[in-house]
Amino acid sequence: MKPTRIMVCGTNYGRSYVQAIRREPRTYVLAGILARGSARSRSLARTNGVPLWRTPEDLPSDIGLACAALPSSASPLVLELLDRKIHVLCEHPQAARFLQSALKRARARGVSFHVNGHFADLVAPQTFLRRCRQILRRDAPQFIEVIAADRALYAALDILRRSLGSLGRFHGGRVRPAAFSTLVGSMGDIPAVFSIQASRRTDRRLLRDADTRYLTDLRLSIVFHSGTLAMLSVAGPVIWNVNYARRGAKAAPLWEVPSGAQPVSAAQLRRQRIDANRRAIASVLRAARRGATPPEQSPEHILEVSRAWEELGRMLRS
Image (tube, rainbow, N blue to C red; front, side, top):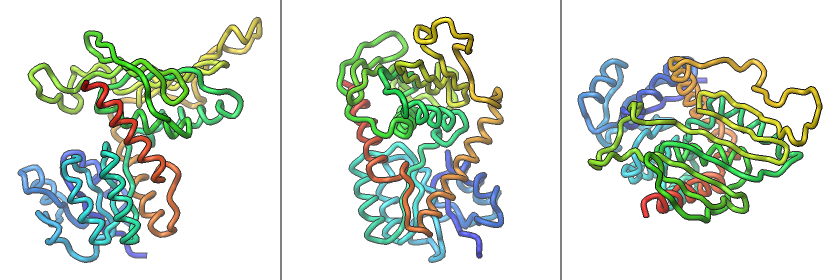
């Protein structure tokens, strides 16, 4: 079978997609870059020996997939790619109204459209959601706590939704500590607290990726009757703390980490993110071939995550 020809739209985070494509030379071919033509875009295309296209009209007819690593302001371009019957793997976060349009357009054109939440496919979040699903078979969640930078809020909600199976609407109010805005209320029927650090500085400029002023990426805790499941960052660790009041005098440990868990360096985490993008590419192409959408890409999932992200965002801005 011939390798799938993939183009990358955007060259900021898009560079990570290029690396993911390059890791599967027998399966994927980087067909080209679609971008505005900045020095960075020209350099990326030149380094990889591929054409740089400026508009969709420049595209050849044999593009199998577009990795749209673009801001939400570029949503009309994503819709145009779907109109051209190109499968699309789309960057997060995205507004629910756009996602509804994209899903409708994809159905009408017979192509696949996925949203890449990135973090949910890393090692620690995968461990967290697997353990959460195991606990849910015997226990119900009693409390949720999320600590995150605002740019990671969508990913946090994506992980929560995958772990719990649903979110429900958030109801609550806001308080403002020094570094974080905190939303206190409930997510559906589950009491919840979201402590979110803003990426916008006092001079209204946005902090860049990996700026040292970020205090956290994201932390998730779900409290059950039987204990607390916590993921301390996207790099881990994941910890299960047993409710010691229910253990009594038993000799079993009161906390545990998953077997085989190892500390992760920054370089290893970057490789995990590239591998997660590689799996995301494989997922959307598999869905295109088989006509079967995975649960985390169902309209119900991506629209519920997007609506929760929009709702929490409105509260944080109010």
